[in-house]
Image (cartoon, rainbow, N blue to C red; front, side):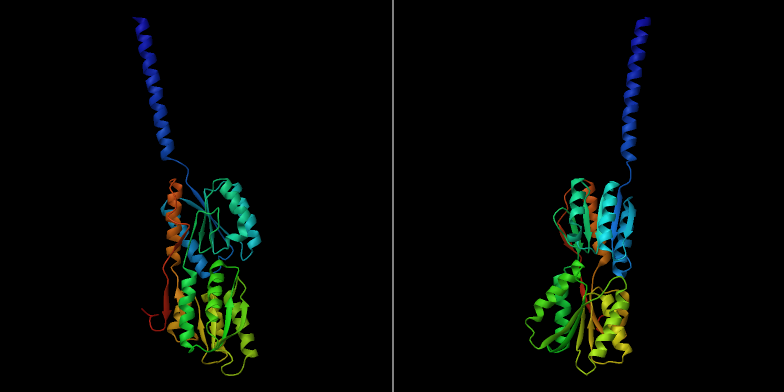
Length: 314
């Protein structure tokens, strides 16, 4: 009889331990550590880059992910070093914002080797990354360049303000170069690189110098800027100098640029990008990767639209 009780108690103990083990395992699954997403950029001071970073943080918070934002203030070399740091901390994912991935090839490969997915937000895509979300930079450049060309009657002298280290601005500028080949009556007066951080102030100073060097009426017909902050600075300089009949165009559609278009400043047109939409795309694709699923594509576009004085207030 005693032996029977011992056997019964042993069975009950084993059953209890097994149940506890299952319960512990279930609780562990439910309380799995939060994912950490590292967001890196050299351009957080830029209005549009900041908008994307804030949108990414919001998307991550809604999904219960932690975020770690790193800004190197225009120093791409330091960006590579800081990316090495987050790789060593075994972050769950990396997002590079407004950054040419070709400058981070070594770090992207290291991340891939450690199974850390790397996403781009308004950056480029290279092998080793999961994907990049951006606007169709070629299409946007066509849109704004066609508008500028028509507005100046396919003739005149154009100043180009750009920042070729940014992959999106580079594509836009290259498309402009291609389109100007079929416009023999349009002359490129100069192409100048606008330094970042501080693009509005830097573009304003550069434009002031260009206006002094080109004082005659018609010596500058238009300013093609690769993004809105450079366009804003150029328009401010033109307005302050009292120069007329110079059209400035940009790309981004940030609020300050749109306000200037509404008021009839020299800044006459821009292409509005959907930066929050880019961040949404990245977050959705990251969610898929965290679930062990493939991304929908290595490059996905958020839609963009032309803004002029005719529709700026709508």
